[in-house]
Length: 438
Ligand SMILES: NC(=O)c1ccc[n+]([C@@H]2O[C@H](COP(=O)([O-])OP(=O)(O)OC[C@H]3O[C@@H](n4cnc5c(N)ncnc54)[C@H](O)[C@@H]3O)[C@@H](O)[C@H]2O)c1
Image 1 (cartoon, rainbow, N blue to C red):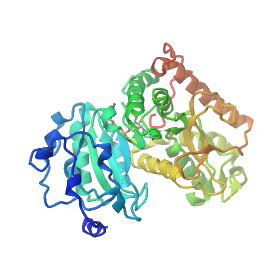
Image 2: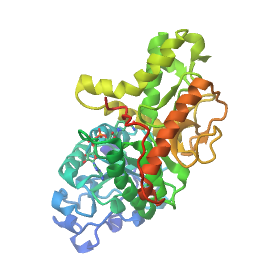
Image 3: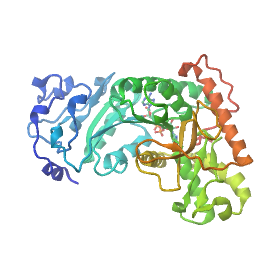
Image 4: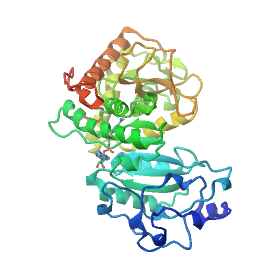
């Protein structure tokens, strides 16, 4: 839909509501951007209308040096489009705030455009993007915001960028935490846990202080299960159930491999669980998965392949991809983040389920409590989920699950200093890899 079309659906613009700047006299001056503050919550951006206004001049783009410690609206997104709440149309929903960290990275470069297009939250859901970068990525973040400007997405009502999570996470209803440091040459998994754990401890505190109290958090940055645990422990005001570690890419990869082996298209594969850690100890569950509604083992008779090749193929898929392409999977990861969100905001198809790394307290499978473990979930589409109870186990599956559980318990001990549970002590069973490493 074109911007012009949108504005015709708006009854009236309210220049009196243009209260974006703390200095109203400079609001429409060429330099009004300088006095900008983070987007105020009183802005009531319920109604979507054209971003254009004949009174408004071109804003000066945010400069890197302006951004220290601030979250700034960006360029064209500083212009107003608001209408009064009572003029809300029936066809457009209330704007939602989506925070994305690592917004200048490769995964975000795919994800942000999917969110802004309406592909994720729906064609009648206006969105505000709050983009968090690192100090090193400020310029790149500005470039991302420029590309978003140039895309003219009707649903994208606001974009703000910054490097201070307390500012950027203000009122976030979704937090997609992608930004993290990659494992450098010679770096042990324990080092990575500590370096990235510190990022997620700080971001947990920031979410606790600034985000919507019911914010849904999807942690993508690796090691994502333990990062999600750290983040959750540092955000006691937010329900533990709201934290997810992304294992959806692993689920999608597993479905693809089963489909290939069975000679069916991948939409025929369902009930795919990834158990455990997003590492090479993860367990793609072929015992409970189904192909065309039948147990996998009834369709794929080559059980040796299932036990030996399938599992390893899924676990190491990311590493093989890096070897081929020279960089890690970004597009398919972004797609899997979209899948993960959509699984929470749309009802799960009858009888099916999806995988997500979630908090283990109260789980029905006997998995150790107080870790973030990938398990099968179902959702009513309200943003929440329930763990699936009707799954079966055999010795093979249980043994593998135990291995991944042991790894996550060790990771938890390793980051005790970041979860407020004492002194970190690293006795990781082995230096396992992330799926994107080889
Ligand atoms: N869970 C999964 O399935 C999965 C899949 C693929 C990648 N990953 C992980 O996702 C992460 C990002 O991957 P990518 O390919 O986009 O990497 P990338 O290096 O292209 O981007 C990461 C971005 O994060 C930024 N960043 C670093 N520290 C930050 C901080 N404290 N706050 C905000 N931003 C920060 C960096 O400047 C960079 O722009 C990595 O940790 C990767 O291992 C997870």
